[in-house]
Image (spheres, rainbow, N blue to C red):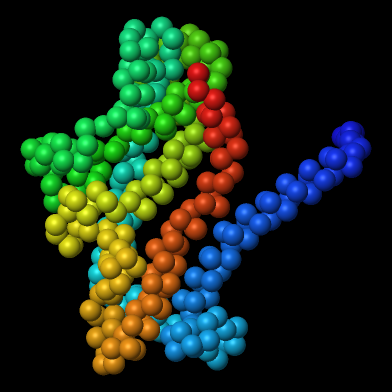
Length: 298
């Protein structure tokens, strides 16, 4: 059994720890309470929710909001589009980022400093929305999936994380693969990639979450409703307060429509968050090694 060193805390240390735990608890509550409220409100009867607020009496609960959301074709189409965009963008972004970071991690790479400066500049300056739209239009990518997948495929911060992670791997790996006759491409795919699973998982999660939550590019570049992601459907429900017509077609009263529309907001938030909630547990184990090792820029 390992010997554990017991550290005796003084009064001031206990006070500081107590304050830290209190602030952490308040921070957790500030995050958890709205989430719990949204989940419970999504199951509430709209009349009870508007008149009394949250109720823990199951007689006041209903799944009508989820039925209306899941029966709507636009929700499913948007969900499928978002899932495709997020998965495809993750594959493209992670692959390009890993390829670009590999030569940048080598000190003997000619022009390494120049490219580092160029990449970092793009973190602070860009061409602006209108010039970018003109460029995308001239490339004939407007109203196509490529306008969503390609422009933001390289994230410089992710590239810096991957580069730093490469630099933390033992140099002996390259020397050993070189002795066995492996060239740079073989070393990259057969030796380095299996070692870099933690940072790959972190980059994949960052890319997937970023694309899943994104809607602005789709709002600008996509005119076809069949190509629009779930986030644009949510925007019409949450921001513009206009649910899809099929969701409330059976309701005649304007007041009832308003109540159901309010309830649909909570249900759509829960439905749109499910993929991210499912993903996090599978990627959590890679966070410590992936983020901590790649967090110090070299």
